[in-house]
Amino acid sequence: MNDHEVAVAAVDLGASSGRVFLFTLSDGRIVFEPVARFSNGGVFEGERFVWDIRRLYDEIVVGLAKATKRARETKSELRSVGVDSWAVDYGILNKDGELVANPTHHRDVRTNGSFKVATDREAPWDLYQRNGIAMLPFNTLFQLIADGEDLLDAKVDKILLVPDLIDYFLSAKMAWEITNASTTQMLTLRRDWDTDLLATFDIPTSLVGPLRQPGSVLGTVNDSAALEQGVSSELEVIVVASHDTASAVLAVPASDEHFAYISSGTWSLVGVELDEPLVSEDAFSSGYTNELGAFGKTRFLRNVMGFWLLQEVIREYGLEGNDLNAAALTESALDLPVLRYLVDAQSEELLAPGDMRGRLAKQSGQLGFEVPVTPAQFTRCILDSLALAYRTAIHGIAATTGKRVDVLHIVGGGAMNEALCQLTANACEIPVVAGPVEGAAIGNALIQFQALGVVASDIWTMRKLVADSFATKRYEPVPQQADQWVQAEALLREHQI
Image (tube, rainbow, N blue to C red; front, side):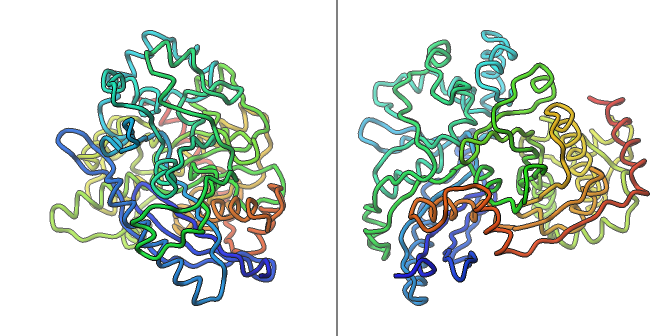
């Protein structure tokens, strides 16, 4: 069978939705189609905010069955499946290999106390020097400390991060993929497990196992439920760059190294690509993190609130009987003056669900800006605040790393929001290239194609393939608006909470 007839299935799990795609290579270009989409989001089980992982897995299996059927219809050979998702959250398995409970959501409040316990015992700067990971209260390390005694139960055997858990459900093989593991705050700068750190916090090292590189083949699908649905037992389960941002950054269609990126969705991950981690006091104090990317690259980035803010506002209005959508809200927001309502889109005060409008209104007023009241005003506040946070992150990264940034690539769902893309170009004062939208799924597929031997194992060859395969849109900054953003940034810093 010719290379262009090889197909792979990419499972891309986001914090608000999940997707299954069928990818093929045809005439030197990547071709894909979505075969399944399903909703996602945290749910409450008692007082704990969790992921309904079994429902997600059932949806994935249905999607893979559809991908299998579609591959037959197009006369392509479906060879493998890969899974990417958000970071830090994990499932706990007992000694029989069974999931103990649904994975707890990183927005659950249980880490509020454990973060303080950890940083009282180990100084934040000392922790940062060990792993280069920003001190975020939802990091896996702090979640495990919060789970505490539960992990010492004699029946508890392993933890698996979400994409590793889905791979395990499919193949019955456990793996700890390294790009996602790098977000846990539990790896050394040499990129192995920090067993001394785990011992410091009484976390059994037996909970984790050997780290795997993207492109590793775990085995074939052997889950009976998947096989009964029509998924082939010959379908290989390939470990991809399973942190969705690692996959998305691989799919940035850059032509040289002088780029920054925003992986834009529920979260916004704003960063540059480095050859080695950068662990400095400036990087630490500015909140930058060093996560591992494909091909050993370091994703030097900052987490910024993304469309989570707007999703929560829309959800709250929906509970009151108001059916709103992001596209209509964005259009109405553009009729309002820029930079009138602002919040700090990097504030941990906006992390948890509930009363988002109240928190946005309160913070905008406290920071010296007008208080949003209407849906359009809240949307304007969110769009401007995100663009301003991107400006702060990009300029800070350039100053901290000394890296020249000529262009900013936005991949992920945020690439479709033309208003935010233009605002970001204006705020950051550099051109923005938007697309591809499904960056994480594309990067996922690229690793599979590489593992199958149909794409060269070279990051720039892969990026050129992406650039040749997908249309993008370029946004030039409006120079006349630069002063407004400079003044807004200064005012935000002056009134910082």
